[in-house]
Image 1 (tube, rainbow, N blue to C red):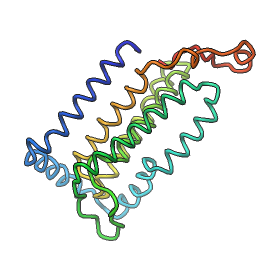
Image 2 (cartoon, rainbow, N blue to C red):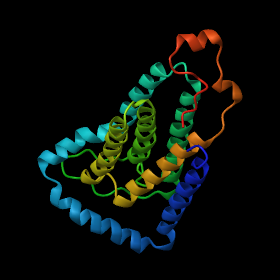
Image 3 (cartoon, helix red, strand yellow):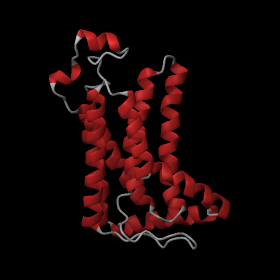
Image 4 (cartoon, rainbow, N blue to C red):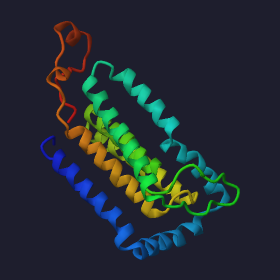
Length: 225
C-alpha cells in the first residue's frame, strides 16, 4: 500500500486543484451545482434535524479534534512515526485551508434563522470537512491495522467514514457551507492524509532499543501502512 500512496496523494492534489480552478473558469457551473444541492437540502431542514446536526457538526470542530489527537498521543506515545504523520497532516491541512479561505474569500451562505452566523471565516474550503477527513481518516487507518478480523476491519473503516460524511452533511444542513465547499474540504483533507502517510521519515523513527521493544506490544519498526 505504501507504494501507491505517493500516486494517490498526487491524484487528490490534482483533483483539488482542478475542482478549485472551476471557481475561476466555471463560476456559473459551481453556482448551479450548489443551488441544485441546496434545493434538495432545504426540504430536510426541520427543527429537530437541525438541532441534531448542531450536535453532529461539533465532531468536525477544533475542540473534538484536539481531544482526539490528545488521546492518540497517549495511546501511541511509543510510536513517534505515527504521531509525526498525524501532525503533518493536521497542520498542513489547517494552514493550507485557512490560506485558501483568505485567498479565495468566498462568502458563506445565508445562515438559517436562529443560528449564529460565522463572521470571522470565509466559506471555501470547508474547515470541518477538511479536518474530519484528516483526523477520522487517520483514525480509520489505525483501527483497521489493529482490527483482528475482516468484519472488524470493515467496521473500522465504515464508522469513521460515515462520521466524515455526516460532518459534511451537517455543514450543508446548517447552511454554514455550500456543497462545493464540502467537496473541496474533503479533497484537500484527502491530499494531506495520503501525503503524510507517503512522506519518508527519518530512519531513527522506526527503531527502538531492546528494552523499549519489550515494554510495548507494538514494535516501532512496523510501518503504519
